[in-house]
Structure formats: structure tokens, C-alpha cells
Length: 94
Image (cartoon, rainbow, N blue to C red):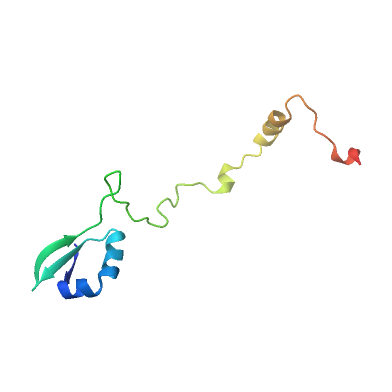
């Protein structure tokens, strides 16, 4: 539900209220307790406002590094990397 503010408060704290609106909140401006205006964010170019991000929303969806490591791939990757070339022995170039 939108926050209701009176005209005096809206005039006094306009900058702070606009920060809230920019963050996606809607405000109702009232005169003598009766709503007269709705202050809401302008939709972005795509027609939607950006939703607030929730930290940790992907928790549990990404496997830890141990689950991704497969030691049997080491030899296969090495063979693909060197293809038909023999690995260079760096110590013999000194």
C-alpha cells in the first residue's frame, strides 16, 4: 500500500520523497486527509520499472566448485590443449 503524506510534508521533504519514488515506492499526497495525487515512478523504456534486487535469490542454484571438478577430465583437457605438439620442457631452455 502506498505511503500517505500531507501537502505540507510533501513540500518540505520533496527531495527525500522523490528518492523513495525513484526506488520504486508509490506515495499518495493528501489534503486534509483526502487523497488528491498519486506520486509514482515513471516506467522505464521497456514499459516496466526495475524491481528491487533481493540478495541471495540464487542461493542453492549454483553448485560449489567441488561439484564442478572432475579429475578424469585433466588428461582429456591436456590432450586437447597440446593436440599433436609435445609439451615444452622449460628447464632445457636454460
